[in-house]
Length: 332
Ligand code: KG4
Ligand code: ZN
Image 1 (tube, rainbow, N blue to C red):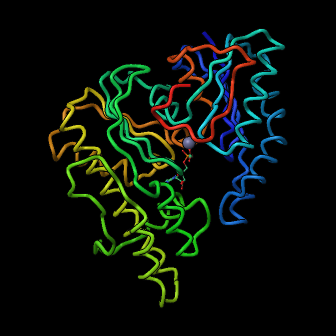
Image 2 (spheres, rainbow, N blue to C red; image 1 turned 90 degrees about the horizontal axis):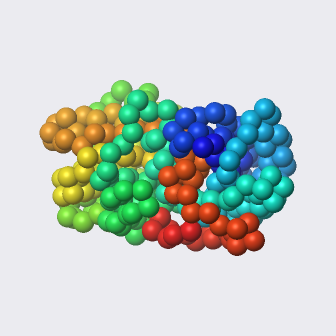
């Protein structure tokens, strides 16, 4: 079964066709990131306008010589103006091609990046850490469509912590890749300059807003030189990565899942990937680690199409509604 995935929740206009949830047939993505880099972050109105400009060219590219059996579209969470462009496109395609629509929860779809072009598929139960620009959630996935919520952030998301601290260091948006690229250059030792909030608490809650304040206080009276940017990038990254790994492995020890899945934009982070592998060996953890191909960590329609295959709940095109506030536990 071939599913056409549509993802327009934020600044990516992405359309893909995936066969049986696991095999990529084709995908096209147009990103308005360069425009948002100029404003230091996303202005929703600008993002929505770019979605309108990009959707038809991206769609035309994907539909060239390709057929599909159903349409999977992100209905939330995200920016309402951006989401509407994808949903209206899905509705029109459904009506014109007489194909069913499967509404998709964007956060659940992030997890399915781990099912694309992998040598083997994740086994259940699985612990999933979903870390994106707006969300940080730890869930136990018992099987497809069955989640237990373990915990999440009380304030800023992990990606947001990267984006906001990067801004304090005068680094370009998005902050995650900026910080990660600079941190690589750091040759000194890590001094643990910044707090690791809630790391010792035996629960699955996170808090990242204190990190932003700590970085603000640290740089307030300093000249931001290249050396300082490099050093603090390494410190910030290590603080975020330490908390994410510690809480995730606490969940793995408690629930003893067969697989551990990382997902969302922050799962592209190289240090997070390296360090979690090291810790899994050090702590003799048996769960098998799955990491998405980094290009499927960030927003993309490939994961949306895959999620559609494993969650085939069809809705008539008249009944599809966007929901910008959707959480990972909400059914769509
Ligand atoms: O999942 P995503 O593409 O969009 C949302 O659903 O939010 O995540 C975007 C977030 C941004 O905060 C960005 O800074 C972060 O993911 N990110 C990274 C990396 N690449 C993207 N954070 C750390 N390291 C990276 N390499
Ligand atoms: Zn996302």
